[in-house]
Length: 60
Image (cartoon, rainbow, N blue to C red; front, side, top):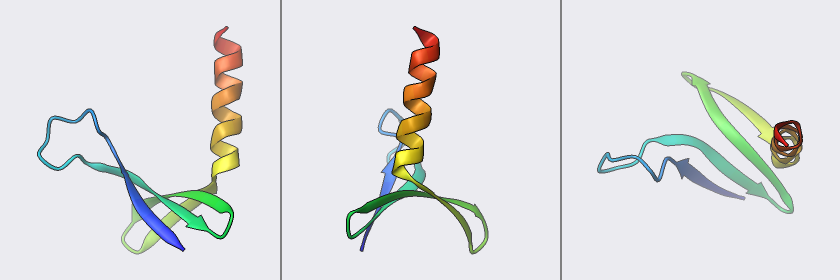
């Protein structure tokens, strides 16, 4: 398993703020967001891609 932070690379802060983490488990990819102390929400990457593609289609 690999867990890496996803940061706002356009931030002017010395250390860009973390938005969420990407988790790679075998061949599955997830985004994980901390929602409270010791509470996380994890969603499959495919769900993110599906929703972004749907939003792009509506925009055209």
